[in-house]
Image (cartoon, rainbow over the protein chains, first blue to last red):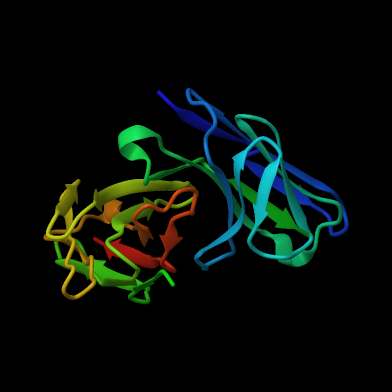
Length: 114
Length: 114
């Protein structure tokens, strides 16, 4: 069966510091992968999605970037964090076969920028 | 374009009360429809889905019927429990969507009090 992991689970970073969040998927190949952010009390904001290695689509221009160095690895980065980058970051992958229309979410990373 | 509108929360109910969370959508063609649930501090989980008109999705006592004529997919439960307290997201996947991410509503927070 497929599983999705996110690391770390929680993170506290100072303003201006770099960021690297990792998402890995097991049990599938060539998945579509997504990064979402959820600010406190707000809905989901799609940040990036990827259909393959090295292919990244950006939905919202900001100081974040994403990379997909391997088929089942999706990384969210920033060179300099802002206070407004605080939130709950969710990675998701798209199902295959009968579940092609579904997205499956990881457990999330809680980021606090101080 | 494609969009999902769901009722604003928060919704506060007493245990064993009847729940309705309204969701309407705009889409070209006939999308697949979903309800996701997010428990505190966790990622999103698929609660139920429907892929064509008049389909009823159901799970854990929740149900929703795909109504093409009213472009709606309202979530209902006859008797809520404290453990149902969570944020509920309505979402759609356009037909023949290829790699397009799901379109989510803004979420509705439900609090059930004993």
